[in-house]
Image (spheres, rainbow, N blue to C red):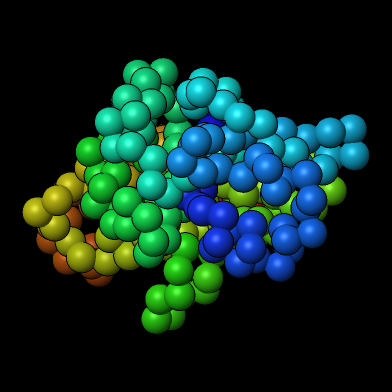
Length: 219
């Protein structure tokens, strides 16, 4: 199952983003120290409502209080790993979990930082634009339009350097894309990559893989 975890707090989320400030029904439901996990459900009009959750057992989009206890979070992440879920995690500079390295223990987690960084856009607004709109398939749209392009770009960048000490199969982007249906294409490319010593030897294979990943991510 796919699950999106958005680390947030009342000030930066509910008060800080104009596209959700008008959601009056979110006021009392937004995650905090007493209600650290909520899942974004939808009503008949495809409008998101926030419902308290005690775990991450359901497929969907979750808002996580960014100061949630580490032991509580790690227990839930371990459970998701055991059930082979694919987790897309969005973190920011506030809270207890501010580094992508906090999630490197788990192969099934692909993490993005949702703050302003040089050369990258602020990711919280597009994520909440999708959550707050009245269209369906919110989970798939967040995964495919926000996390997938970043994972594709990240993996392709890893491939530019031949014979890296860290194999491509050990990267989080590789695992994310495999769970997205690209396992055969990735396995074929990695076999070629590992047999080469220079970029020129596998450039054509990389370009073919790039086209496959980009085309697939646009679905």
